[in-house]
Length: 232
Image 1: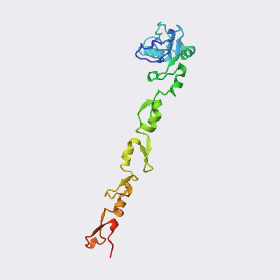
Image 2: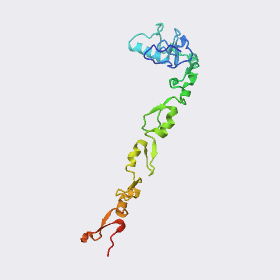
Image 3: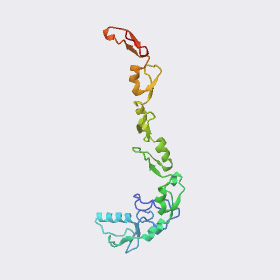
Image 4: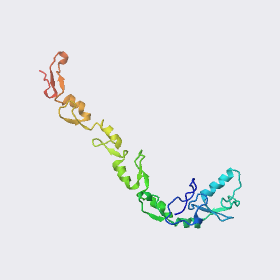
């Protein structure tokens, strides 16, 4: 495996776990990682990651220093002395690496150039939940179970009415759902829909007392709904 962790900035090169040691001349002298988007300097033939040499040159320009190769200090012309090294890119991409998720038990190994294609389907890749508003991230292999069975933000349809809500809001919805069956608050033993409670108490509940139709004329007699006081 390449020795590639010396620079704390760790930008530029490939920060992957290579199965075989990467050749020394394929290691960027700036970031100490295998070259990524390799470029070569024209006057001295040194190789660097594109982003690393650009960072180096920008730093020199900002400091008012002459542009030069960080390896041998030869002067460089930014526009004319740095060119793409496609052959080196192809060589590095042919190296075998371990899956970035090997610490999570992924056994895949393949050429560096195939890494992104593998990660699209890697069961151990960390991916976000696809339900809106959910911030959970987990391994792809558990995504389907989470999305449809465990996620607080999965959409559930109420068992009693056609309204849908996120799972975490369903309990609150059922506290007010008009179609939820409830027992009569007067404890008559009947089960009715919540939206029908008022009508039930008014017209059906056997335990609700009603006044005589002539109460306004002074009649004090009361009776149940099932024993309505008949007019004479």
